[in-house]
Length: 100
Image (spheres, rainbow, N blue to C red):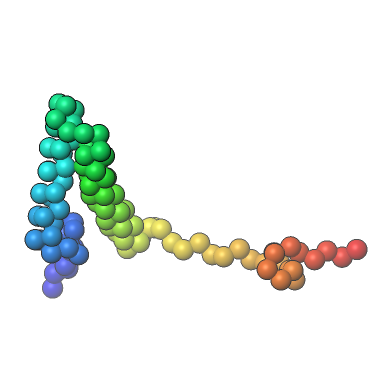
């Protein structure tokens, strides 16, 4: 019995991944054209937004994969226990009552 592993970008259909890759390639060409003086700054900014969205999405996916893998390993990340409260506190402000 084998284990199944998710491949990078597994939640997206292959057609959508291909479309996104083509969009990023086009944005790279637009940005290169700006540096050659053939596009306006406005077009270059639009291309940068497309590239940034792609990079941010990939970074989030990678962080989720790393966190999921670390949670399954022995000695991996564990949930921290909530701080213990000693004695009564004021409602909502966590100020301890003191005796005078």
